[in-house]
Length: 378
Image 1 (tube, helix red, strand yellow):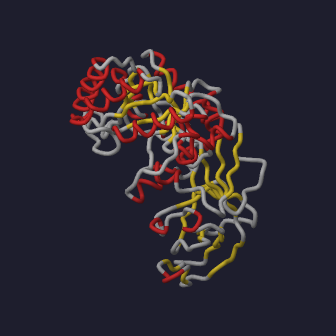
Image 2 (cartoon, one colour):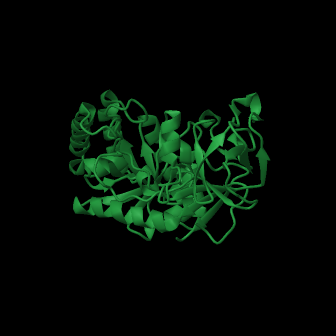
Image 3 (tube, rainbow, N blue to C red):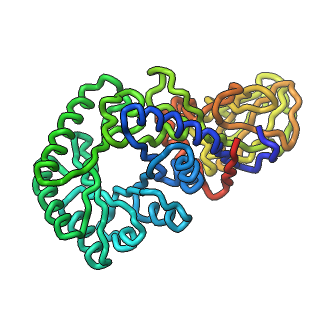
């Protein structure tokens, strides 16, 4: 896979895949007349926010989205100058540096809006604000009953030059379940909120579509689409059409030792697995401290020496053991724990299925202290 030897634990991030996925997704948005915001929160879903942001902007993205002010400022410090929105604020966030850095800010309440306007007033600038309406996710966002007050307050702040209302937006709860009735219900509420904002004298754009809605609901693309997980090649609606996405992350290690054990010998803690006959075992120096879920003990495999091989015994904190049968393997051989799946290796989606979770959780949880991250242009 790479001319570079695998380290103890290495995340290989393929920027070529990021570029490809961005082109595919932004082309879908453009067909509806929508711009594309690539979401790079949580350090680019574990892939590295700065290199992903740069690759995406070079490949069709118009702007970027993150959760926190700190994430936004880190991108600015790294030289990323594109339009950038952050949307999840704490009670003690200082919006002044964000205003100075031309970071666009979301407001879900009058209190947040007032704090943003005050920061802009103190800095002598104008903050670009996206007003977020809760249309049914019941998470971040302004409750519908409070929306008229928020848009009226926003219109007054805009008149005074403290803010510019750039957008009205919301987030879908069940877009990854095509046909779920809540999607249309949220779209109706979103339209009502937008019309209320227009009636207050505001002229915002609209954005609602996440990755799943981008791929399945072109009628909800509006002015801007916000792909997140799909940018990283992980399909939010697997089995619903062909989306031509390429997973960008590969998790690798290497063999650090081999041994031959006799039939009847137990392997790893608790001896949950016993060799049925003489076998060769390969020791791999990664474990649950490096992101390999202990819950996959006895239920996972790796790609080693040209084929899938089962992990046997319990996954430990720092190591796991692979059954290689009678095959010869050697110290230094590359071990792929998950990757794109092109050669038949396990994938992040397969890990997620085995754990009863989603692939988002797998990739965002992989970058840990002992895990290096290698960004390549494959």
